[in-house]
Image (cartoon, rainbow over all chains, first blue to last red; front, top):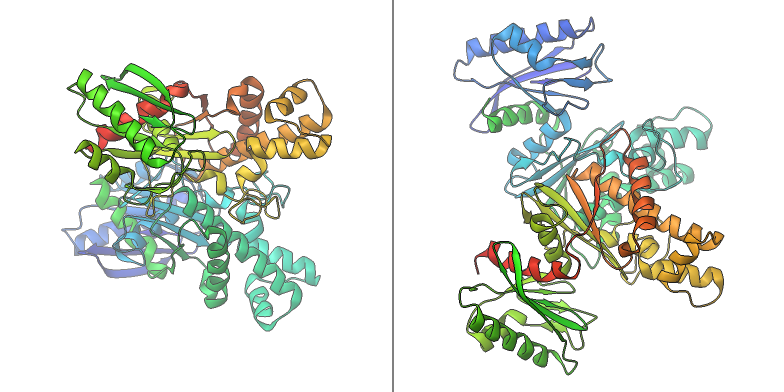
Length: 291
Length: 291
């Protein structure tokens, strides 16, 4: 199950294939209603697939260290410090496995998507923010406090724009979709969306082109840095901004190549599983934890 | 065994204790002479410690992927593309295990030094350059091409000073001992060593203080970035510049705390094993590989 701000996606993973995929709107009347909707879906799917014993739920936003609560999910109404695991245990009488949605997607791409067959990969999602999931030896690397993969918050331009975390020059403050739209709106002195900024850049608009190129360069340099630090076999990039396609991937690859030259090649692939990555990854997380 | 530009240090590791430690000058008549000296030491130590079956050698500079050759070790005369493993097998009739010296130190500090008892740690050496060794689940994480841990070459100041690798703003180009001496010499318009720059900074010299503070801030920000990316339990810092002591560690910790605030605490410890880290780590590397 993948719970997002607008949709709850569900499905059953069997032998690496997603079955019985369904999508329903996310209730907007508070987290209790969201839990009720999740529980109803689980019961219905388990009735139809009695062999599907393990339940994984992907959610946006950070989880607490024991992965029992969602700290906050700004895109889901009322989702602040939600005891998702306990709430669903009360409703279902069984334990579910919670996973951050970017980490779920990382797991899905590593096992069944663009990084299939590799031992180490980093999944990067570039959309309104920038997040990542690091997969080492087939499993998510979480780190001591569960924050590993916070790629959007590494400092890439000291003295640069300040993000909500109160720090200057974080990657997502200079290269996310939000940052691109912000810079394009300033330069053009009107509201410009991320999509329009990319369209103008493709048409050769000087300011838009500079803004987009700078953002892609920052992402490429960050990947080169990760290549030097962790040296993964492959990077997989997904998310709304990456879905722009060639312009995005060419810009990122060029900068990554330039800044990793002499160290190692940087292999960058497009995410393959699209909107199904969250559901598949949540199922894989549940499978790995044997819950 | 730890082979450096001026000294070859040897010892026998038994039950986590270093015995029979010896230091001799590194021959300066080419790599064949270095290999002869290493082989003589191994034979002598094995005669005295017949139960010490495994031999590990720590060397500066990058190793090839199979860890059979030293690509180049700029500090050792004649050490370019040296077939160390084959050369020692010819002389000794047994396989030795090669390890990069920073990675050997990382392993030593992780198992027997400042990071003892942790599951994940990053050892950082700050001297003329900046290097690192990443230890995950008790073992060195090497990555796909064996370059993992190249912390000195991550880009921390786009547009900043260019390093030998031809890239702008690498960490070691703005924060190594060499970078500090370069900036202090420029600002004071005379030759200033790294040690003098720190001494002047401690005395309140405005330019020296600014130069040292900037360098320490860059290192602290880089550690905060690594905390967000990998989230290790502990950082261990060694190397000549770090041996300055309080001024160094206070500056690095303050910047790391500032830039990791809201994410996770950054635990930084001083290296404990000093000049013995290389020998101990080489022995641990040999032990782990069962060579």
